[in-house]
Length: 85
Image 1 (cartoon, helix red, strand yellow):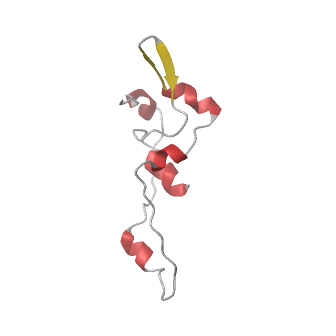
Image 2: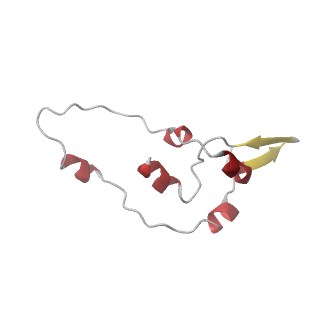
């Protein structure tokens, strides 16, 4: 299900940030470092929304009201928030 967050995104001020790249990561890897892999497929769901923010991410379907408990991936600040976490 896709939640239309166009109105929410219109009220979020833009904050510039620099996303780290694979090339940046290579500069800090030294011989003998331990490595791991992480599946980021559902990574946004690990960022919980504060109680007072959840009211902006509610929707109605079949007469029931649903509310996101974690960051949804269509919010404009999502990538910056996740990167900073």
